[in-house]
Length: 414
Image (cartoon, rainbow, N blue to C red; front, side):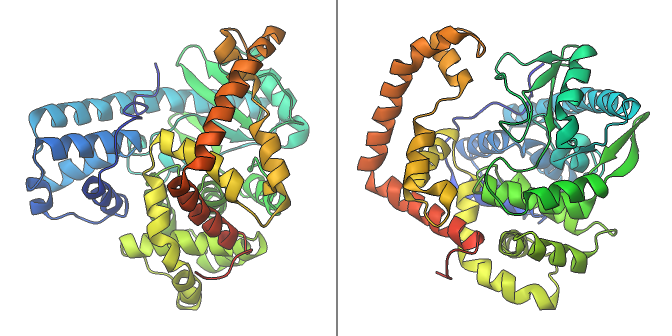
């Protein structure tokens, strides 16, 4: 079973629907008249954008809690999605327990990251926090062992996965549980690009993991402080906010956790070079909802506020928009060695094995995939030239680059 929240990827932008979803993610009770003003097209746009951004289950819960009446076709589809997501989350919970049991039996330290920890400990219902996959962090020295262990116990390499070891990426190739069709990723560090805090946050996540009961299984989940820091770097430096508005709900739930030591959080964020990214996320949550930020951190969130509109806009980009912006950012981003023009060109001319395999109609491990390189290079070159010629796109990408440079501490206030 595929993730039921993974459709409507091409849903167009709609400013009114996007503002509604920001408020719902931030925990604001939207006035009834806001929804009664929606016509059939408005409801269709709201539904499509909520599904595309994986927030449809939050919309469902809001509709139920507030007694909001939707047109029957929209209500039926949103309710059905919530039901299917609930069933899918049950399968993910079972698989998480299986993975935890196998790793614990082999004495491999581990912790379930990001969405897993949120879905099964922070949200009222797991379906409210849809997961694309189960992310599990292990020490780098045991990543290959953990990967092989799961394969020895029935997990199979995903059809779309490449073939590589821990020396290449921050994670091992994706695995799939055949019984439940749930994807599992074994991570050995938290960030896929150059960032000074990577090793520190990786160690913090493993050290602070908390063991909890999920169903009948004992699993190790990321604690609120470490998870909030991980979500911060993932949403900001890694994804430039294009992973969607669900991040706003994540921050809200973690910030409200009574066990969260906020002063220590701010200290750790500063030591990991995440003070600005965290400040921007808190500024978004504060301006969208009603979270309380400590007085001594208000100057940082105030300094981040000018970037809030741009960050929220990025959360609702369609996949095609995000892909185009990513290419344009590689041309525009400056300020660190990993984003130099030469490095950007090198990455743009280096396809992943799976991209070549998709064009060639073969597997990523098949050497004949390279026969597809000319076709890939031609297509890539056409997109690159189109990007170079699109002044609006490049201007928008420059705004992304300016925000990212500021987040990294390389830029001044706009």
